[in-house]
Image (cartoon, rainbow, N blue to C red):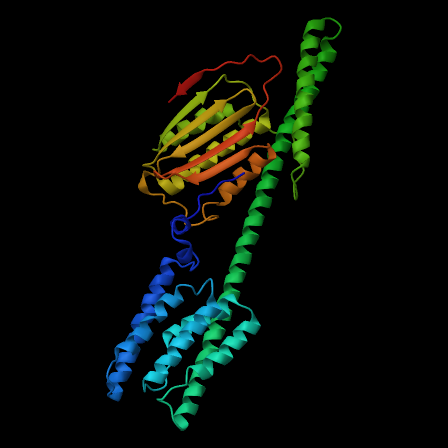
Amino acid sequence: MTMIRTDNGAARAARLPYGIQALNWTRNDALLAIAVIVVDLTGYSLSATEDGRALTVPALVLVVLTAPCLLARRSRPVTVLCAVLALGLVLNLITSQGPHFSAGAIVALYSVARLRGPAVTTAAALATVPLTVIGSGYAGTTRFTALLGNTIAVLLVVAAALLTRRWQQETEARRTLLAERAVADERRRIARELHDIVAHHITTMQLMAGGARANLAHDPETAREALVTLEGSGRMALSEMRQLLDVLRAGEEPEGTPPAPQPGTGDLERIVTEARLGGMETGFTVDGPVRPLPPALGLTVFRIVQESLTNTRKHAGQRARAHVRLTYRPDEVTVEVRDDGAGNRPAPSRPGHACGYGLIGMRERVALQGGALEAAALDSGGFRVAARLPAPPEPGAPGGEGEEERG
């Protein structure tokens, strides 16, 4: 389970009355509506001055009323276009202005073409051309010229909208492909690491079996200890192999000699020290009775801390302060990394932007261990990553509470 903070705009909208929420408008929509008012008022004023017409209050009101209509262009584009065309029609009927194609009509038609299908877009375009030339300011060849000009304008607006929609679809497809590729790469990397752990256990089993055979006749006690170690390594290797089978592994080169084991919780203090040496103030706390963890689980904890500290340096800067907390509980282990952001890391603007490839890798690792991951910006600034991972205690291990402060 990954929890990502939603954007502030959505939270603000949730506190608004239902009628305002239904508009589904953003700050950019409001700015666009203001720009449309400025453009249309300027165009109407210049046209009236050029033709010697007086500016009337009803006409100005009709131009201004286009703006609130455009606030709902994302949720109700067809309704907005109808409203804008109706206001423009009334404006044309009560004034004698010449041929024009208002900015409000351009934005409304563009929204329909961007958000609706071909049939609706075609109908909207066919309705827009004649409705924008009805008015007392047209006569004779002027009306034909206006029809031709508005037809060209409508075609350009629709073409621009369709090209934009296609570009955004291709961009989203590429983004999805990159995310899927990142997941596949991370799974292969996890599979390689699990392979290394299993290979290490098998090598240990081979050595212990040879030692037990060599000491079986003259030193039964040593042979018994070797067999106990062999049994534990075999059980651990079987557990890791089951996880290995859950991960897709492709394109691996043949291994030579089995490599050394991967890092675990015992290496956390080392990477915390490296973070301090890099100039970032980093604390490290261990709660609960420390106990050995399965190698794959220890590796997951290590990678979460490593990636979180890397993200802190990358996004929050060297002035940020970070703290790592590792907690051992009877049936699970939790790891939390939080930073204060040092004022440099804003909250994610929307879900998914905070979910980079590093978080994808963490999520994959935690999911393989059957745990839960939380990653979210903090209201007070900074960022927090926390993972809960099942970790049953070893048979016969004593329980208890305690705390060890490091750093």
